[in-house]
Image (spheres, rainbow, N blue to C red):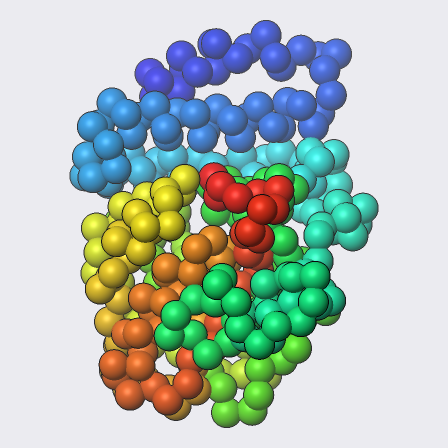
Length: 288
């Protein structure tokens, strides 16, 4: 609470009566996020932070209270109104047109496979190119815990993506127990559940995660691959055709590790669907 007071004191000049409502709401979220980051540093990193379970719970509930007591604002532009306004949603960069038939990466012409295809995954599809506007959208969902964004995200995915074939089962990428306790929900699970409803498809929590939850944000391709190697295991009987669901495809390391775990458990075919992907040479090559 001392950290919260210091952060509010440092930012109090930004809450002027003459300032815009959107500006004030953005800084409220910044207070909570800033306190959480500074507290993690005080605790000696990610592992130490999660040893303080009570404090993690307090910050999670504080974020939820702020979302309730403040008028809604668009997660991307900050204008008061819907959680994602129509102009911002329409401006998000859809992935369509020519590209890789296997992984969906955009290219000047169609190709059967490409260097961006995640190994062990038969096919992948994504709705959006990861750029700064998508980064704000995903950060609002995960870091600011604005779960109301799941509905418009899934509507967009349903518009852009083809429904997987009959017989396929949606499998969300699991979080570590520590990350789930910090965030309060698994965004991949929320997306999979909503997509399952929209597409009338079954959802199975067929994977468990056993790694230490090392942060992947900003990590290189090789570092990401090492961080998730062996991180997943099947939970019970694997579906015959699994479709992994995640929020962002960056290097493909997470999808590859998850697909290998499912294949080891007897899954015959593994595909993947994500909300967005980082495009080689694109505008959002570092996921933050």
